[in-house]
Length: 160
Image (tube, rainbow, N blue to C red; front, side, top):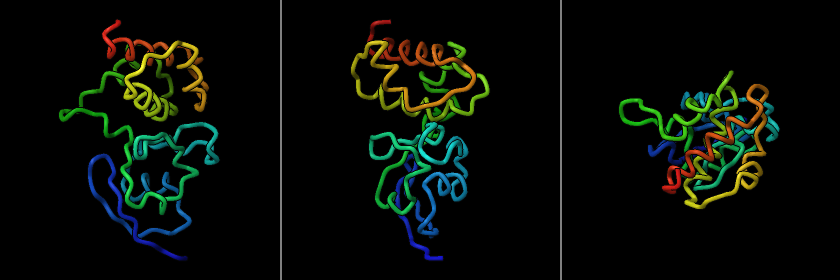
């Protein structure tokens, strides 16, 4: 087994670890850093449960090799909590809109929503639906998730 030192920034903290060069970013985040919001779903990049933000772009961490994280800035759902554990506006919107049932897909959806919201752009409902289409949810039927993202977008843009 070949190992390599990987240095990166995770949720604002510089870290380094030796890992198997075949390890996925999902495995590194979960096993080495205990960031359990990063879910192991399909492990082939189809469900979005493992979605994280790397240098400002969304990626399915299950098909992203951990060694590719060298020098990158990675954000997981854990980065969104306030200093006293308070939820971010998008997390609260998911609660308020009943967009969470079992919760397995929720962290991935929220990280995609973060990317959408941080663009500062206003999207139509259809555009939001398309941007969220890389995620599978077996519980909510998607409408409440879409409502939560749309509501937060409008609130941030002062159009609530």
